[in-house]
Image (cartoon, rainbow, N blue to C red; front, side, top):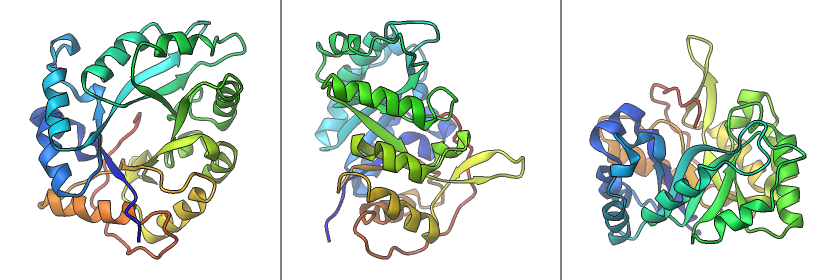
Length: 274
């Protein structure tokens, strides 16, 4: 059996917990759990971003042999703006300083006037590959604008890929299956989370059950084989290493077309806007 690469989006450990401990503190745990890639979350850094010691973080990640992806809560297009978000450049700088090979952002308010070609100039100075994720918003979480964006990217032969978040489609009542069929060929990174409603009737991310894994297998038929995939659901428990290791094993088998074991669900955490 192949071992497909697994990442951990650090928000999976809980925002408050990660901010308290610092993102670098989770590196040994990820390595011990068999993770291939760390997904840093810009919103989980504490204090002024300009004062962060990103080079030290890059060194710590590289020393353990982990790949690094930098995730930022940034929309490529602001409403009413033709050119890309001016904050893209400083965000790329931070990603590069962390040693990240990828930067993950959201689409934002794409329109007919949006200058997609202008992204090439913004990206050129950086050795960071841009990934655009379906988020939970009306502008960035629906199939149509994302299909429009990637068709324009493809026509311009721009090296921009997609992060396909399986669970996020539910916030805009979109079909994950239809999204996979229309967008699957652009996908380079898979965010995995099942979704349920909590006591307050809010959608929340939860670990997958067997039925979720079976549905995910069907989605993967429309995507390149062996995609890196990330845990983006709560990792909680007294033995955090064992909890993480179990979920890494579940996801590394995803796409192998083999049965995967059911997993118990710990209490869910609201991971809205991830």
